[in-house]
Length: 186
Image (cartoon, rainbow, N blue to C red):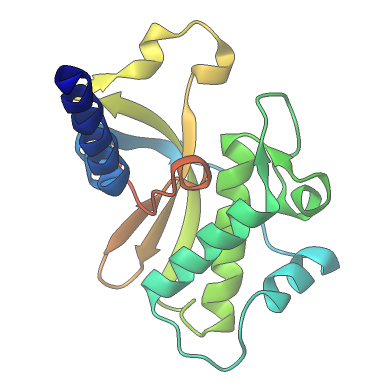
């Protein structure tokens, strides 16, 4: 009985530790490499613009970190993951709500760019969806899959046009694991 309690306590501590530090652990073992940009959409649909406006404050001074987090949250609230073919244009996704990584990245980038403009940071910052490769402990994981679905994985690079500072964001991972940013291979 004591052994069972020790095992249960050890598992509880392990699960709690992994849950608490999941972002740090993820960033240590998974890295993203951009292999090129994806289409960057502009928000033109009234419902998309209304969704963003309704869920943001007016006149606030938000930092770039706040804007990235807000765009992540708005994307997670609006979309749900699907592996099937679907829209990738955020102006369509606001209605269909189902997306894979390409749609998540496009929706996040469009939302983030809208917020950057709204809060007057668009002269300095930009969000760009990227086609990427994932590396697990330095090993490209895409070469182990035959399915076209796993040939790449989209994420977003939020970049300072002046300083070159970069935030790499995977909105799909944020939606599933609540991890706010990821490691970008340079």
